[in-house]
Length: 405
Image 1 (cartoon, rainbow, N blue to C red):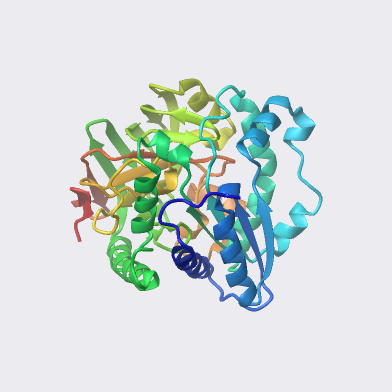
Image 2 (image 1 turned 45 degrees about the vertical axis):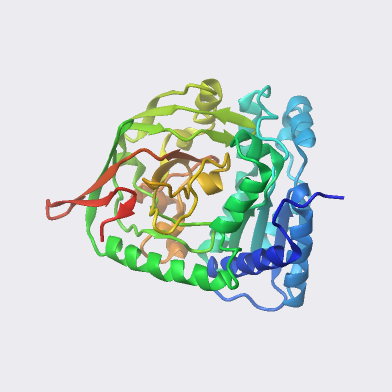
């Protein structure tokens, strides 16, 4: 029997399932229809939520595929024991499924966050590179409006322990952040969706040539590039309060500091400091996990380049504590909001045009980054972000944790 986290009653999980289905629908350009194929991926502790979600999707006449992810022990055994042909193995039928998939919902409920610390990061990277062709299929389907996805978190003891919170408080933070304590959570999400839309229109009406991010540990220039638009609060993540852009990686220069720790691929990294020159990381250091950091950014040529720059307005987010969970930490509100950069792959839906026309050569020409990696590194320090416009004018667009529009 799987233990249910405090506060996650059947009623709350039913609300969660409804929000996730709404989010998946929002994340796809075309409307879903009866008979669409939906994949539910879930970690074992979230089984009760997966069962409710399954019922909701069946009632909508979807064709549902369920996949439980490997346990922490399975993952540890795999990366410690597998040889190259096992690391790069793609199960029969996986590619045809991706080519037909219409939607995906992932329920993140980790049993461990550091179980791969003794694994050679190059083995993790090799497996990720091998699976990139599956992700590329889904990216192309999403660009065509045929696929939509979302993900969420379900509370478990391990991230609560790493965040130094009781499981009850950790669960409460998830419930509040996702508006599951409201009688009608969807009405709250629709409100955020509308208000974020006003900020995106303001940002996209400006011809921004560069962004200067300044905080105690960061002094970074990011170049949005041609044919870009700000997106976010689009349904892809629950919760999601960030507005972001995939910049032209070639214009990135300066220093970026992630004051929030990061748990990734069973490893812990804190105090990450990246120095960019000519668009790529020239040097990388960290207080903890430096070797893992350096090997991750050596995974492929795009892993040391920026694929995303994001800002979160604290007026939207009630998240006010470290959660040891990137989904929540990149949406941190607190007193100063947050920004984050992602090393690795870009998001083609930040292209200001039809993403379906973005062939690889076009992406390369515009400076969209390509990589097997996408790693969000978060800064919650007091900061300002100044836009340099095509007119030469400089405008502070973000300070004290809010957009200035």
